[in-house]
Length: 89
Image (cartoon, rainbow, N blue to C red; front, side):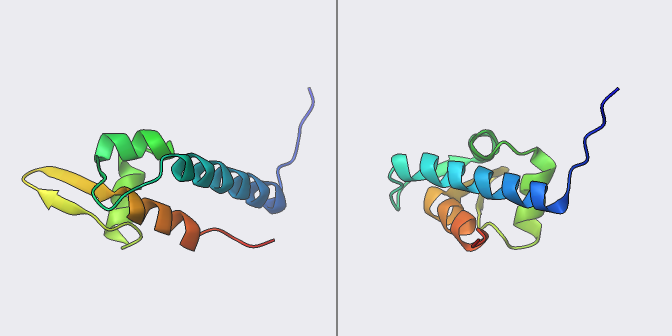
């Protein structure tokens, strides 16, 4: 049985590649100020769980608007969050 070790550098490279891919997807969509997404749409777009999205809200990484029991997110804010958290190599 072969065992492969994953290093922190491997994980950092993966993170950088994922962020670059998300930026590419978001830039193709040309977000406008009036584009609002529901939680399920954001989770699908970013490939994250409901708990991860909740943590992004709680820790102030992603702004939101709550109307009734629904959360809405600006596509522009999502793009800004990704840009702000990207790393330079």
